[in-house]
Image (spheres, each protein chain N blue to C red):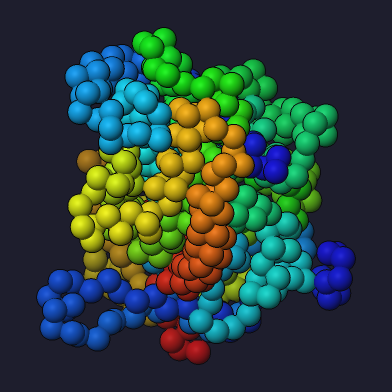
Length: 266
Length: 342
């Protein structure tokens, strides 16, 4: 675990050494909540009936959706991105030459981005709260395991994409497809119940659908985590199965990269 | 010796190592379904490097030096053959190999430029399972060794190439490796920095730290200056192995440069015809009239007197006679010629 923290710490030190950029990233985040507040306010009457059971305010509904999709995006892209950077700079070669397990390297390389995205989500939530979003603040702690499960559920997609990067030097279409589907079919901007016909059934295959339902129930409705056990169980099962499958794929990619000499090639 | 490892005085043993890579196909080749072409990077390479030895691998670009190093560092798997480091096989026990062998990634970009030298060291100390006071002590010790104590808390982005190279070595030494791989470590250094860096490698790294060092270079002078033994790789084949002095004697000891005036080609031809010199190459005549002729002298330095005397009789003055240090190209040419004759 200390190896993972060492990698996260070094990424944090490197990122925060660009002080102005670092401050701007938070400033722009807070500012981005303002237009969301006005747009959501304008749509409140239209959306009020649609979002019933997932909070009564469209602004809060939208903010939680956006925080979740940002987190999913960071999770999916952080690992392959970190791997691509480490490969192109030659750092990967140096890291792989240390007695560090591949799983520790993967978590370490992507951990900072994911944690940073969580912090950004919290800042966005606080900014939304300051603008009057109805958030059940006492349930903030209870929402943390749901957030972690959402991250874990999307980690296999990141691992599969990283396997593609390792073996073929490309991310492939998977992350973009998942992100696109999650954005429009996962309940980010509107509940999945309003999606017409057979397309709605696709949302059942997206982990974010269950994550968002659970997150909104806890954070916006103030319900206990026990009430969303069904969503969390599906999310958990999806995580376990896909983590195992992606682990096998990654090991195969690693073997292939060692065979063709891709592993430490810029 | 590593626990559980077979008894051996050799730090590295490779036996029949062979590796080919598939060439990337063009769009046209892909569409017309042409078969993939392969490039042989290593072919049946066998050699043993003794513990504590400074071993040089000489070869032009694409000779297979880096592939050999990547196999030893467990980054590439060979097609056939075996490689054993401190008793551990790179294929069956790669994790053990990574504990005893460390490649110095000579690419400066592999450092974290937005971190200080100390933070770079701290990260790799953690990855090598060094923690707390032990890690701090080792980091201070190594920063002192590479003369970076004063710059330790500065961002690496502000370092010169020489400083970055020294930091790369310090980072590698964190784990107290028994075998160190250096791949063209002086390629981005100016001649003066390169010389001081070579001294540092020989005295402070190889001798003081007691490491076995494998150095890949295409600089013959560097290999001859640093190494106990040198192997010459050519197109994936190890064509010669020996002590630098031995190798130089075998292939280049009799190579001399003569400075003559006037440039009398018939006198040179007569010397060649008599077998006193061979493989003569005349170089440009300078303003003062002296011409440089590079040639192999029969009998080495002893043969020089014969050649000078002959030239004097022919009315040609000899201003200087000095041994020629072989370039990598000359060395390869001669080693390959000898290899072909053998």
